[in-house]
Length: 334
Image (cartoon, rainbow, N blue to C red):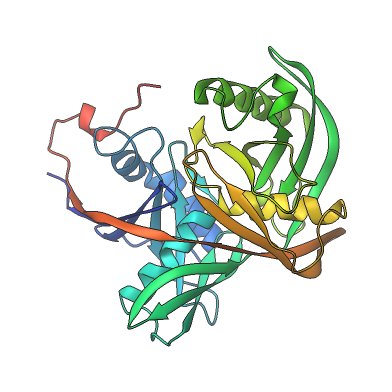
């Protein structure tokens, strides 16, 4: 029998957040990106155990707390999913802000408590509403986000040439209006949206060389966001679906995806600093987002973005693996 792995489970807009609280071995590394490489290369069996069936599913998401190496950080985390390890996750940061206050990882201050969370992409500050000692809605300020490319043509299997924007919000996303595929993010079948987004991701990975000025470990496409194409109508919610990792569907509006979309909209001149937009997911959940300050990342003009949403608790779990249970080590049917 393996040692017990204990977790606290939450969701943000329907997207799961499984936070490991006990059972992971100590993770070495002088930097958080070194820690990320270590779990990828040496502890991936534990990701499979917690994320995949029979304990998880193809769309499970998780968090591994690690020792911070950044002065001033209240906590540091690695993010995991059905395929591997992300560099940023906004819906998880929203959950972690509330979790940190409720678990006493930071001193609770009303009406708002700040939590500095070191993510693989850099430090993110979550601001947690606190009333009567209870944590509520969370807003966080992102790492610098930028538009990497606009109206870049890639050639996809099944759909032919497609124009994409590529934005960085802690991770890189291709952003495409769904109507390029004859689809609608609010009414089309999820399966059809996933297939189209996956074809775009495959094409971008093959045809576009990404780079990030800070670290090569950040220079990979995380997924594709299909939108309702309503970037110019800032007085109404805009809907999107994010398909990331190995065809994993985000139930939330996607915090890092909202960050990337805001950065692209600001670059186009569609929104001003401080102008708030509302983003809606496939579950109907909503995040708000706004560009709060201009900055630079290498040669890229960038903005930091504030994203806000609400997380909820769903339970606690203790997981084990019996000796000889090969199927129980983790599997995926799709």
